[in-house]
Amino acid sequence: MAKSLHQFVLDTLRSPLLDEINFQFGHLRVYPQGLRRDVARLVAHRHIEVTSDPARVYGPGARVDGGCFVVDTPRGQRHPLFVNPRWTFDRGGHPYVRPLSEYERAELRGTIVHEATHALHDYQRLGRVRPTAAEGAAYMAGAIARRLFGPRPAPAIQNPRLNGITYSLHLADRYLAADRHSRYVIPSQDVVELERRVSAGSENRYIFNGI
Ligand SMILES: [Zn+2]
Image: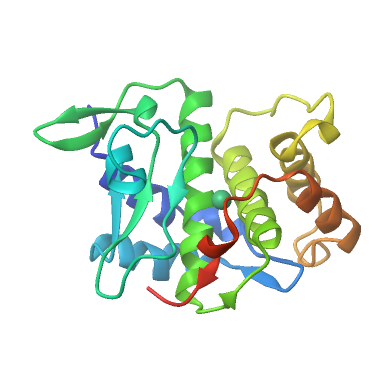
């Protein structure tokens, strides 16, 4: 049965699988309680509004690919967590998740965890964060989630250095294969290499001042 996007996001964030997402990327931290408890609660209470309406985020007529979490929302307004409408259909004015393959579902859950990581850093009130650092941490968390939810064994990454997605999946595979105690700090060389490959939006969208 089709599930509302709101419920799908909550189910993703509350999944016990996210207990594996616990790392430090440069000076940024991503940890299970932040996603499973804090960001999930913000979604449940609709301080974060799950949407797949591009006009809600980018204005009328906008074309977008990928997802987005809007950090720079005016005070008192909800922060949109935008999921690309290619994943959804409309039912009674609300987005529902369309039927997806196992692989697609894992990709969507990875996107949700990516955007939730931006929300977590906003919740932490980190202030101004270097855009590539914010994106690197979110790519890393999203890639781990994609692997956790995805089919096993995961398809091997042929060319890790191709782009931010392939490099983050490559790091996620290594992270998940490693011992929990030795993998916490992402090696600085990997941080540099991933940051080099991520795409970041305009500078002024990376001021994490609270939700
Ligand atoms: Zn991002």
